Length: 534
Image 1 (cartoon, helix red, strand yellow):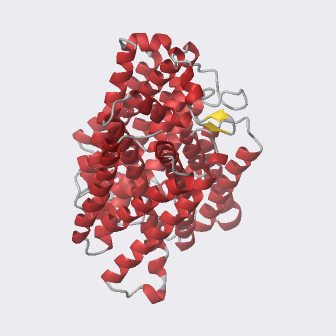
Image 2 (cartoon, rainbow, N blue to C red; image 1 turned 60 degrees about the horizontal axis):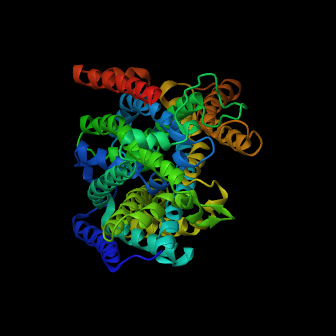
Image 3 (cartoon, helix red, strand yellow; image 1 turned 30 degrees about the vertical axis):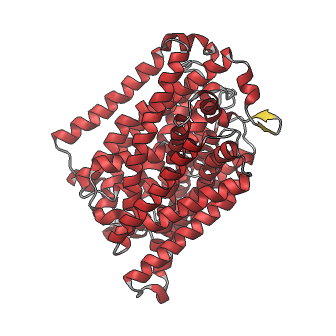
């Protein structure tokens, strides 16, 4: 595929502007709080948009339409996954976020040391680093295959170009530049996605006509008897609802890459609004790129040469490239460049946030614990943090070459990786919040068993939907920790480190916040109704 000069000008102009923006904002960085949490001065709207931009990654832009249009067992059933988002946000706003904000932490795993002990904190930090860097490799892979497609460069050079640009941008800008650039990227991305959808609708002379060409079996079929526990229904209703609840609870509430932006809020009220806004606006965004998947699927029905035009991967069409191939084949000069900028925006808005959070956890939980590094100057701490960002970015580039072995769909790949550990992670935090007697040793044993059991499910219990791993990991972690503590330890932890349910009586539960919780619950019901009748 060859782009015109105007397309190239738009793409490289955009990338250059990102680097200049991050360089400009880097002048305000004075310490680690500036670099990692923007000195806690951000408002809820900016942070909510930034988190939405991170969620709307290239994996979503490429993977969701491909899943809806072509994946076996796919179709619009992916929207069932969104039912759990508002419900998980309610739990995060009430029980999880206030703890982190009141403790004034940079790394959320510091809470685990206060509640349990140091080894629990370091174990959870290590798991976060391990899982998230692999997921970052998926992000690099997904956009690099697009660069390879549109430039003719080898995959190796494509990965290096994306990785190096993003690393430079991240090292310079810190979290403040990430937030501001995410806002710009979100405007570009949503504008382009809306344009693509209307262009697809115009091909069929209307939305109803577009759905008429969409294969009937790929529409939503809410069958409440399907359970995904050996019935061959990987994307059944119950694993997507229950598994999705634990996935989002873990990802938004107990994952440094998302919670770190909530910690940038200027006060607790603004921080809680961040999750409220995400609970409302995430579904319309997901619906937007799923409808694009409907359009691409319908387009392949009237244009039988489209699928054969997709690049082959092991002799099979790479459906992850369906969206960029459609754009290149159909859109005019300049518009193609702008749409590809949107894909770059999606990739960078995810990649930069993750690299910054990896650096934050490494610095706060490991580097600063070294006796020889505790008394370093503020300037040296910033320098080391940037070196750590460079390290994690380089490692993500290396891992990008191994993504193909996980799943043929990038959206499934990144969710599958996370589902191995999401349940055990929320299980440990739940032990800290809901129990008094469980100590760090029991919590660590619980999460190890939870992770290993999920890994066992991946290798041997292949008939169980991977969506269930999120719930299974939680239950195994919680139960093993309780049983181990009862049988072997039976000792209470220091009461000064306990965060019991009594703590939440002091939270901000006025009429306004109760109303917002009700709104999210009603919104979840409305999403269900929309999916049911779609």
